[in-house]
Length: 103
Ligand SMILES: [Zn+2]
Image (tube, rainbow, N blue to C red):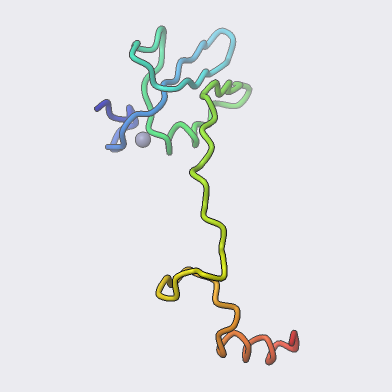
């Protein structure tokens, strides 16, 4: 596993960055097998997403957009013991809505 190049970060590298100081541009690519050519390094997702170049520079993020995993749609049969499941019919919420004048 390759680690992020940022000092103090132990995240797994998922992207590479290469910059051209003449053209004032930074390219971000998916982590491949090849070492990045030129000046650059490898970054974890957090640092790749947060990469902010100096003023006047441009970031060209060429990573292939990976859609987030699909979230299960909330359905009426949601497990009752799931604390994140929507429970609009709880008496607490009903009372809160009534108190707010929304019901
Ligand atoms: Zn990092």
